[in-house]
Image 1 (cartoon, rainbow, N blue to C red):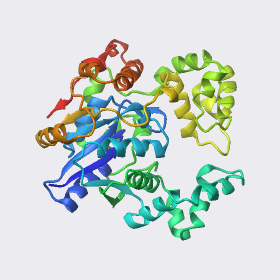
Image 2 (image 1 turned 60 degrees about the vertical axis):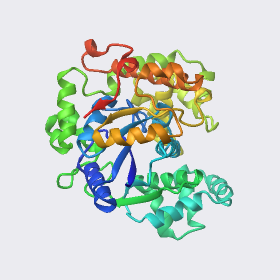
Image 3 (image 1 turned 120 degrees about the vertical axis):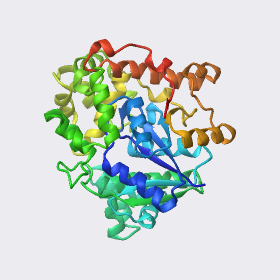
Image 4 (image 1 turned 180 degrees about the vertical axis):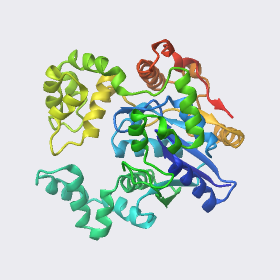
Length: 400
């Protein structure tokens, strides 16, 4: 039996995501088990997830996934490269995967693998350093560097967000020397970040924007996601917006010293100085980001640094690799896959949070980070009465 991994955020889950799930089974066989590796309460752009992890995981299984595993927090809020590497390593450590499926704008797996190989070549770092001297963005320098090894058409793949993630997934598979086969499926409907829907498919960012204007956006979610949203809203837990915690974020930043910001600047490019100075005076997070922004630094990178600061994450304390597997939701086929994983997985499987105390210190530290971040996340619930602490220690996987 084939087992396909899909790396997701589902923030929120829409019909384009359902299309990928269905196409994966159409191509690989209806008996294919689908394992999703999903971000928890925070997402890669340095933002709060619209709904908590359990609600999104349940909707994923109701929409076609069999087993949802959590992408640990440090990788969920990392760069595209770190996000991809952490998710691929998580899925590979199950030791049951045969394919890695993902959407892309081009739908050309061979081309994405060519670009991935070029980025991994021995010559690439020198080419990139040369192009970065021009002084524009990292993304532009990277594309020009790849263009010196491949065709302009291949290099241009680095202009599209889903292509970029697909390339990072292929890079991670190469790094891990994995025999798992990449399978890319052309994205349909609205483009990533498009403001308007195409037919029944809108981008996740468009749905989030529309939700701020009214609940007509619910019709653009997958049916199970719409149901999850309404259930969470009725319980006072949705929608979760970073603006609900804006004062707390600013308070955290203003309490930090310059050296605290420096510890978050993994590029060692002095970006931390801009954030530190802006945090002293800014009266809002968007004002802070605008003050720190330059041509070279993307907003997503700045937002991730702000989020790491708010959550108290420290790069020096993050494990190099995921250290456990944590199921969030599953159906009957997912339970069968999990039973196989218990015999074959390279990492311990954490179905009962309290069992983390039986694992090593790295696993305990990582879970403690997750639990602390979950407590801060819950403080952004619309109804503060729903924001009970220590929730992560009491929540097992959703069984469907």
